[in-house]
Length: 116
Image 1: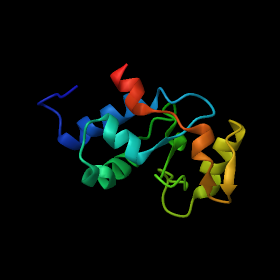
Image 2: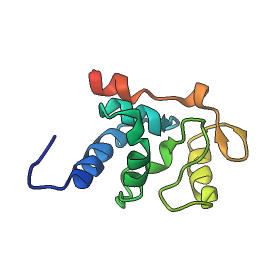
Image 3: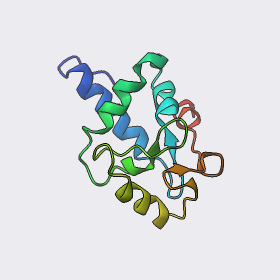
Image 4: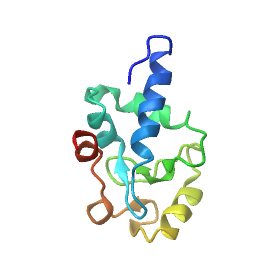
């Protein structure tokens, strides 16, 4: 997937888009899981979370990505959880509280997908 003519950040965004596009309806992936699936070290999780904000393609379901704790993490910015929560609720994703997804019930393994 690496293209030497593209910046590392652009490569990260491209890789993320490919994986996130595969998250099924009604499921979520965590930032930690995406980082691991891309074979990045754990200290790169913040870069992965930041790269999510760079994805502006509406066909890529970035709303299906949550923090490792299940808390909402929107690409739209801090505090804009209502939009992400609404989109997940339309997919019948359940919540433990106002801003925390029931990850155990809705988890999708990006690692299993990547490793086939």
